Amino acid sequence: MKYKFLHTCIRVMDLEKSLKFYKEALGLKETKRKDFPEEEFTLVYLSDEDGRYEVELTYNYNPEKPYEIGNGFSHMAFSVKDLEASRQRHMEMGYEVTELMGLPGEKPRYYFVTDPDGYDIEIIREE
Image (tube, rainbow, N blue to C red):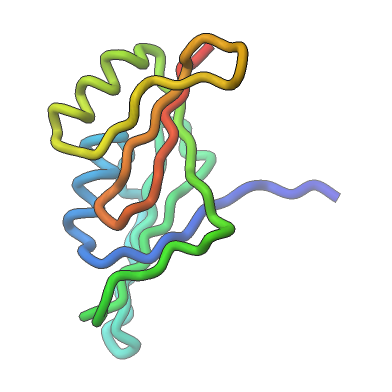
């Protein structure tokens, strides 16, 4: 049996702020949007140039308080050719960014940037 990875869904407090992050900081493009005014939520799907995988942003109208990020969820990951330039760009955009890191015994090859809702996004040097 063959399975195909489709999307990851995250709930967001401010749809416009989240769209700005995923579009500007990560270069994703909106692929589709579904509004459900009667049920008071909107789904927005974003993908990279390859379009094989999507991030689904779920915006529930008028959320009362920020969502708690589950303690079993860790992060999403994206790759980029120029890791240092990407990190510098994210810092200049005002996002929370970690130092460059590497696994034990390896050279630094990744960092994390935090989205507006507190989700960690790992940026890995493309090899």
